[in-house]
Length: 112
Length: 115
Image (cartoon, rainbow over all chains, first blue to last red; front, top):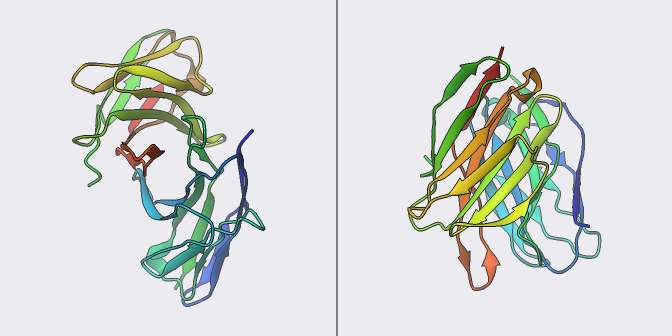
């Protein structure tokens, strides 16, 4: 069945460092891919998405490219800020079923 | 603000009790999803309703049930509560356009504490 594998955290970086959070997936069909972010004490918010192969989603300096050949959707940011400290979830949209599948989440802590 | 509302925000109850969590989706969204988020298990999909009909079930216990009403709001009922049911419960809604499921929008969650 469909699945999402996300790198384990926590990830601790200094401000202005480069961020990569790995996400790979297994899926039948051509699902959409998402990154959600959860700030402390809040619900999940959509960060970015891509709906087909080679699409690049971007928002707030974050980017991720839908790579069908490597079944990956890695999240990157060139220069992180303290305010980016949160938990990041990779998610697979439904494809032939009605179920979204979320990764386990990666906690990011950015130090000033 | 995602446009999804959940009540109550916090709930404290005792083992063996029953509670009802409520969710109102974004205006126009027909789909409602329920998730449980606990410290040790991440975000677990419970159940999905579309326009009043159950569409998918995840790791939902038999003690838990849900429904979606004609006005599209949804309720998650948790009964015979156990300590391990303490968690954050999120509701999300989405639209379905052109045969494809769109982004989910999450509510702020209900934090349930079972003592």
